[in-house]
Image 1 (cartoon, rainbow, N blue to C red):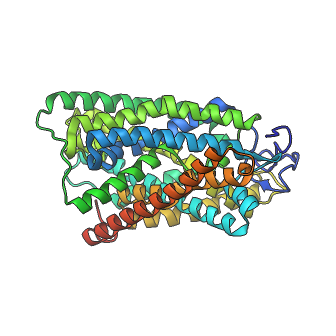
Image 2 (image 1 turned 180 degrees about the horizontal axis):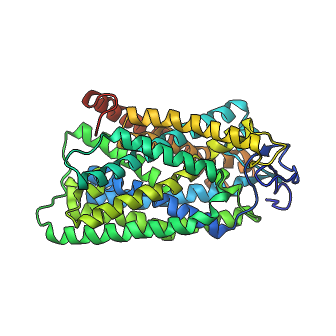
Image 3 (image 1 turned 135 degrees about the vertical axis):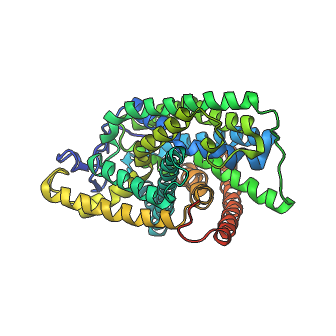
Length: 442
């Protein structure tokens, strides 16, 4: 791939007219600016967000030890490979693509452009709603430590949405997060260290735990499929080209270095918490791990407080492509992002987005459902199906027959997996809508 051309775009964040070598594509956000270390730290901290406190229940309980560990390893390796492959197509025939949908549109036409954007949009919306519910649960857990009658979850979801709005307004882009990543890393490793300390203490004293899988054969199969969706969510985001666009050249090599960081250092911590939580509490592990903590009180409060604060930073990565699309459309591209008129538009766009997402999150506060649906319906095609389609389109005529066969198998297997896991996720949502009402205080 030629990485000398097409390496910069118009970025109103810096207020500079740069070399428009991306077929006239413009962006309100910075392109070709960040080091691989910065992006690697972004990935490590973002994937070690408070969501990992839900995965012992979502992943290990339906699968138990044998299948749980096997699926963690296999899906983790498969996801790492798929992202490694997709990173190589940031440049096609010397042309740089800063958005996933632009790659698919360039190779497969407008329909795939729209489908890719719809899949990404759905993924990021669901992910952001999951973050809001997570933040709300963390705040409610703190309140519960000091009151026998804590406020309803919805109040805390609103507070979380307001905090996300403020951060997204003052730190509008991925590149602007640079000075916040060190703090995010400190918060990340602080709450993980305290979590592992409490989990280890509880595990040593818990002699009655069991690891049996309960339920009918049908429910066990559906729950296992949901677990696979959750593993995918724990490993990938569906927005690799957008993250890669922020990198300095050579963008392909630097993106792969950042991925190596995520799938070594990053994976060590979030897989460690997943396995440790299941070891300590067995099949009774909660859908939100701190609910199992026996104490001390300071540890419970600290973990939940840090989870909330860290989520304010980490959620920003997962919703950045939506911000970029809205900013590019509604901000004045001829003026800097911090110009008065653009600041007003930026605040309005952010307010409308987070208000709508907060309302939906408060109405449907079922975090496990969001994780499973996110991993099945949209992330599987974005992570596994589309990269193989791109490979066959770009290199299919020159690739060896075994490589073509592998990518065709990947497309067919992943498509079937997407259908099966989506059915599982929808089934879970239907069950929960029968169990809970709108604005349930779960």
